[in-house]
Length: 84
Image 1 (tube, one colour):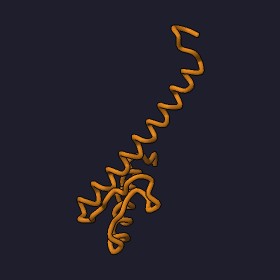
Image 2 (cartoon, helix red, strand yellow):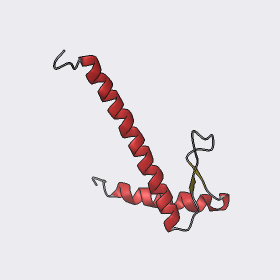
Image 3 (tube, one colour):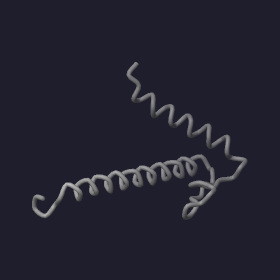
Image 4 (cartoon, one colour):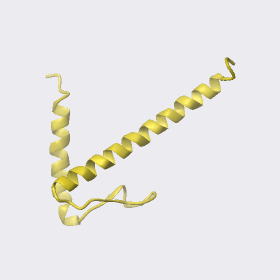
């Protein structure tokens, strides 16, 4: 132990930081999808708790439009990182 901080505490701290990072990434992705939906006039609502419906609800008639928009957005994003 060094300065009252054991290896076990350090390992636990690393695990907690990974969990916090995953939650932050999840939150950011949810916000991105909601913002994109809003920009294109799709009413996307966050579900609450650990819903069996997933993270969002949106009008069924907008599903293909939303998928297409997200696909274009993500493809554009990925092309920025292409090494070709």
